[in-house]
Length: 127
Image (cartoon, rainbow, N blue to C red; front, side, top):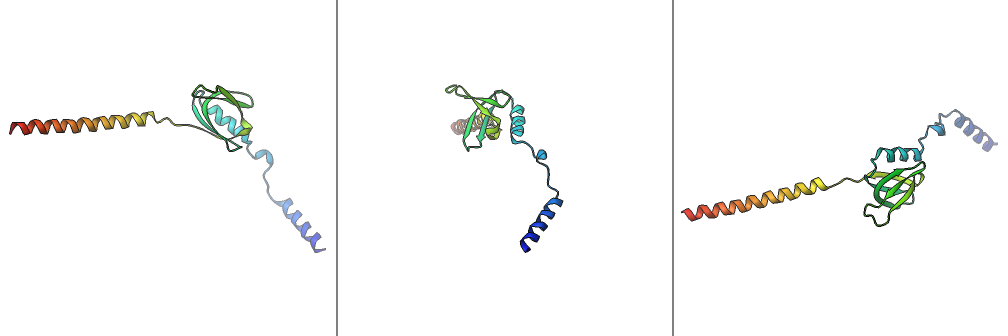
């Protein structure tokens, strides 16, 4: 008897709870599709699959149920990735500007050090 009353009360509480409808939960495949479409074709991407596998390459053509991931080294060609298999996709940032600035900074320091050494040596020869 107590069990029946407990189950009845539980069902009554659940019936009055404001539970969102399933249609309101965003579909993961559509979210991934929108994310892939927003990435420019040819951009370097890092793709994480639901199987925990990680792929890197260039974003290729967007298909109805997936997209093409092209090997940026040109060795393996391209592979079709289904939106339903993707956990996340991110654009990989390029470090070219940073690397150029480091090289320019090192060159400036070397020029200043050599210039200071030459100036010190030439001033020392006049005394």
